[in-house]
Image (cartoon, rainbow, N blue to C red; front, side):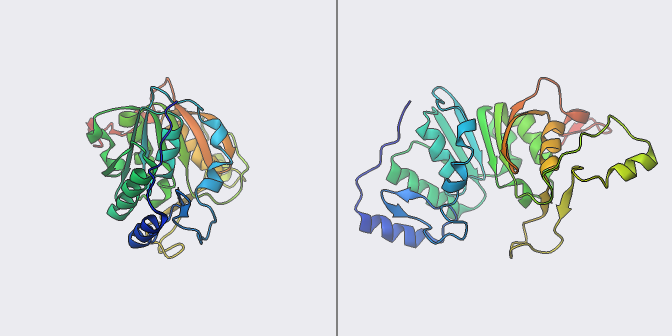
Length: 261
């Protein structure tokens, strides 16, 4: 595997640039300088990643990775450490990209960072062995469409997925179909796939639109054409592109015969 090689920059210079580029949401270790040591989630996302890193291939030699909503690049760098040949991170926030590019320079990581978001995956014109879609879905007004587009245009094999999640971790296995009255009652079962809608704000963020429960995360992934490989925590899933097409054709409007993109 190819390791990333940190550059011997003076700590004072790294500290100066970290402060200049702040505030940071990813708490990265840049040659001993922490970018967000007082993070309210503590050591985020490193501490979280340690709870599920074992589900990912330890050796990504020869593989390509797309990190959607890459922020300052934590997951991009971790995949590069595992030997991925090509890692592309995209984010809609230029400040995060500036942070990621600086971190890549300090760490000596050959990772490409571009301005973009999930709606742009078709325009990339390539598919990736691993797509990372962590902490993005709940910020989207049209979440299922995002999964459809990833399946249709970006993912060739694996998807690492996470969303802010609420409610029970119980899971109901729905019947293939219900009549009207039984179906309405079925919706009230504990463990039915549900997604809570945030009309105004959550944690002061107007882009926190949806909070699914665990069953809903899994159901949306399956509906978009993925098979669940592992679920190490209530909010993290490793999924694989399924052999069968997504339900109702994915990101397509059948009545018009046109693509959503």
